[in-house]
Length: 515
Image 1 (spheres, rainbow, N blue to C red):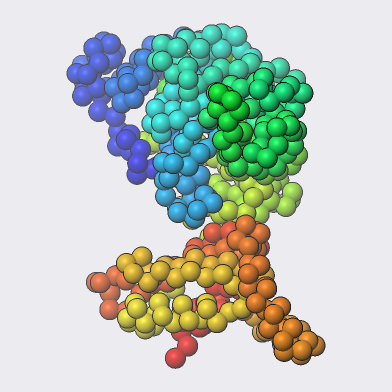
Image 2: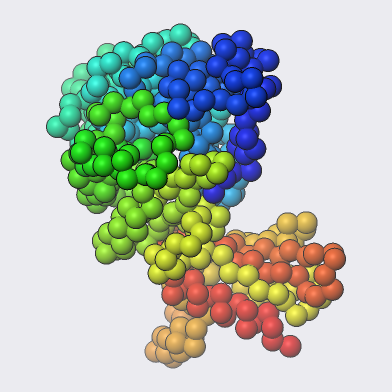
């Protein structure tokens, strides 16, 4: 995946950058090329790009990783698409008003927790510059954590000199603690304080986080779990907003590749050519027991406990072989909602990423199935089904679909003919198959007509989209240059049962093609 929104989708124009950055010009060769084997040149490229394109001033230590900005931006944009296409409003596009909380984790437990609108935070690294980059590019805030003291110091310095303290908080945790410490970040529950309401502890955090929250009907501080609305409450002159966060919208990570220093050295020696770019990373950034597979496996184990307290768990990989192993692990554990992608920048660098969720909101195809040549049985089930309608008039096809959807009992359906020519529906179960019809007929035969009608009306009301087994969007697209009928696109919005979605698509295609 090379995002079309990546401002570096084309190669960086070094000559133009040199005219804008005198410091970078010092590293440019007479032929306007850059010596990527020189660590100083690589660091200056990163600093100059961040200064020119994101108005960020960063300092980079000479003995720590210097992640390339273009590739990291690809990760951020993929993550943004992942979040945008799995929102509760089913918009499939960017919502500037959406509240998002994100966590950036690294091999040494560096975390970035973001609050306020759409969050995409990236590689904590030594200096937090990618967090700053993400924070500015999507107008968000975050916090970060790591145990490597030098990286911690440089990260704080870069946050401070860019005036991002209100959006990026550096928080240190213990190495023996969990990789995703929601409780420590104040995102798992609101803790009971035992204090009277008027002396409740307040601190800024996505509005106000009340340590022990209050309700409009009770003055007692409560301790609890679950999802609650933000409720403004006024006690005398104190304006409080009670807020409980059930968890995170996402995590992101770039774990170390290697199991040991020996493996790292052996990998470098095995290459036929010297590396394209100088490696300035410290061992603490590149080596972890078990390598990236073991690190991500620990993430998966923690996700089994946290479940949907995190909407999307994501991580980047340095080896394609690791992606297959991790995806197989997820499938074995019963995960039915995941995404894979490949980040391609130029002709030299490739990285891969996996996202998984224990919730049932599904991303679009380009986000979920982004690795070309990946084993078909390991790709997530296609979330979109497309077919050509035989009728030529788009309005006639739309009327046919609308009538068929409205004829199905126990199905919530909203059709918007207009320019969008689309509709969204939800079903608690399969209500379109012959078996489902026979089941309803049997139930109706066993009940008197009045009771059956009342029960049917009640069940119609009980179609709850949050608990629906299937959510879908049907959209019609007409290509004026093609004489055939419109294209029907069925988008899988919600659910984990691919057989149910496939059955629905088959039924819809048959109904549309009926004369």
